Length: 66
Image 1 (cartoon, rainbow, N blue to C red):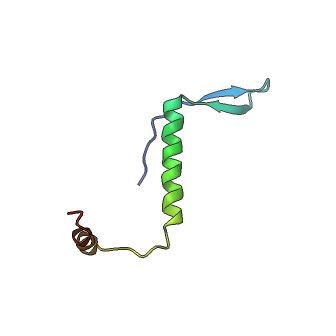
Image 2: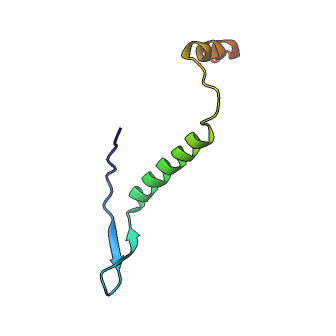
C-alpha cells in the first residue's frame, strides 16, 4: 500500500545548486514525526503474540471495560 503524504519541501542549496537542507512547515514536520513514532512502535512490537478479536473482547469483558 502506498500512502501519499501531503508535504511541500523547500530546499536550501549551495552555490553549485546541491541540496543541503530541507525546510518543512511545522504541520508537515509533525505529521512526519508522528508517522515515524508509529513505525518505531510497530517495529518494537513485531515479535509480540497476536490476540484474536474474540479473545480481546473477552479480556475487555473480564476487566469490566465493556
